[in-house]
Length: 223
Image (cartoon, rainbow, N blue to C red):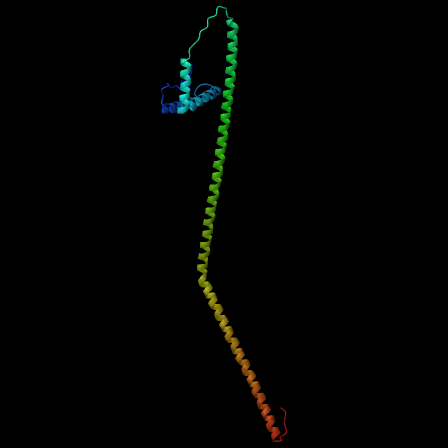
C-alpha cells in the first residue's frame, strides 16, 4: 500500500525537519523527468502529502488511520460455487480505469486552479509593485520640485542682494533731484513774493504821491 510517506520518500519515523527537507527536494525534482501533466499530478500529490505530514495534528490522525488499516482482520470467504471471475475482473478493471481517469481529471483541474491562483497572485504582486513605484516616483518628483523652488528662491535672493547697491544709488539720485527741484521751487516762490512785494511797494508809493498832490492842490499828472 502506497502512503504519503512513500510520496515524499520518508520513513514513518521521520522528523518534522526531515519532512520539510523532503518536500523541498521533491519540488526541486519536478520538471526533470516526465511530462507537464505528470509533473502537475506529482506536484498535487507532494502538496497533499506535505499538508498532512507537515502538521503534527494531521499527521497523528493519518498515522492512526494507517495503523487501523494494517491491523484490520482479513476475512477470507470460501464458496463452493464457481464464481465467474472473468466478468468480475473485467468490471473491476473498467471501474478502476474510470476511477483513475476521474481522479486524474480532478487532479489536473486542481492543478490548473492552483496555476490560475498563482498567476493571479503574481499579477496582484506586480500591480502592487507598480503602485508602489508610482508612489515613490511622485514622492521623488515632489522632492525635486521643492529643491527647484528652493534654488529659485536662493537665486532671487542673490539677485536682490546684487541689485541692492544700485537701488540705493537710484534712490539717492532720486532724492537729490527731488531736493534740487524743491530748492528751485522755493527760489521761484521767493522771487514771486519779492515781485509781489515790489508791486505793492510801487502801488503804495504811487498812492502816497497822489495823496500828497491832492493835499497840496498840485495838479495830478498821470504817468
